[in-house]
Length: 105
Length: 488
Image 1 (spheres, each protein chain N blue to C red):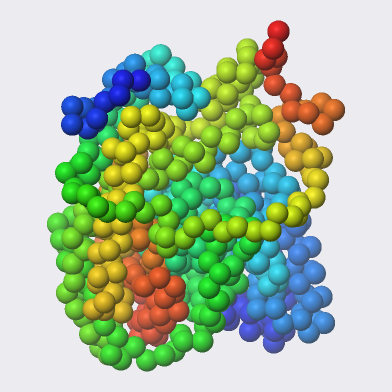
Image 2 (tube, rainbow over the protein chains, first blue to last red):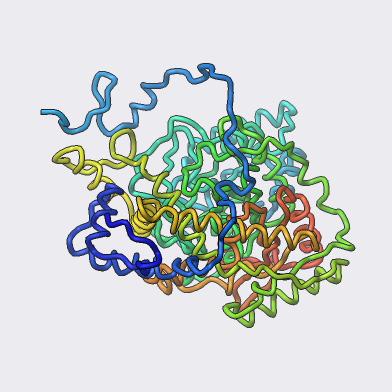
């Protein structure tokens, strides 16, 4: 993807960019859907565009509303093995392994 | 029996006026007969309800005094319930039977409550109308043409139609407060971190918060007593001690300073809704509160800020749905890539996919600073506005939504019109503050809500104000047409 900045890129998005994003998100978009999806996302990006006009110099980004940081705990094993329970709800398993289509020929 | 509050039901069970089996059966019958008009539930396990009720009656007979013993409670289908399907309103999880209970569910069970059923919701809590649910939208019990709001629309509709005494909801941008307003019930979104997120299907982790939805502020206080508290299994759960939310319900609000953000009464607010909220505010004034004009100068930026942060976090959270470990898998995948992309294409609905794409874009190389970091900076400006107001006033008040419930289909093809529904609620999540909606009037035969916003961890005060207001008014006692129907 081209490295563009808001200064020269008015937050619109091209169809080929949507296809790239969809690939990154691992979501298939049918060919006839690309155009309407692009239009909708362009409208959303146009709406969020107004943030670019806000002066945020020197403002610390807020990742957590209480500015809390991740808590640490003692490195002890606290989980028990629940493989059977977890695999009971999987689409396809065999011998304790999750099955997917062949990856390595 | 079905019209009683949770507080009244708890007293009735303790005094042996009725049993939990009778109470549960009453709600099961109402759901059977009336939920066809409402579509508020997606799963009800009648046998499990009956056996839990029988066990609760045994406990009551043995003198057990857990606060909610024998009370049936509906849960939004976002909370994992062991062995009971948890769909999150999505085809992706239509076949998902969790191997564990959410902490919220465990806490209700520890306090004796019964799981009455799982309620309908917008898919992955993304929506303001319930129309994105894989199971079809729930309907507003006040008017079958109208939406119940969302995303906790099934919970709000069930409580308003008297198909549950109370329910749980979650609120990422207004999903407890807006449906509570649309259905004429009371709902509170606590401070971020007050209620555990463990086992609550994640949407936007820095915004998500669970809370109670009920017919009175007193019932919300009772339920919040059960829900709130530190959970070592949720790394963002607050370690701050929990107060008794029922203790201050009756405290006089004389001298309370209520800020009215000018932006919450500006263009966009329907005139009749404005008039009803103004009259509710005069009621609070009559109870001894002082009204003070305040300003939230960055509030117009809450919608764009939210629609960067929430989709960005959602795109990360929803990457776990891969068709491998649980949930939906497409038929006959050609290879692993096809398995991922087609399972996600077919398993997710339109709005969810749209938000994943927007979020992926905002987080992608070259755009992160322009979108995500920028939105996080504006988020701080939005929070700073609130904190500055709280130097001058104790709480803020305004409308919960711009108007009463809208007609189904009216906004479902226009994402941005739908996003603007939450214009008064989104900023509260961005700032991590507690917010509550209470019934505050009727507009053209439909309820509207007043929103109260408090300082961090000031839930008790919001509930106190709500309770005092409900002692002086009867908006919360208005009943939807569907609620007045009998099941027998």
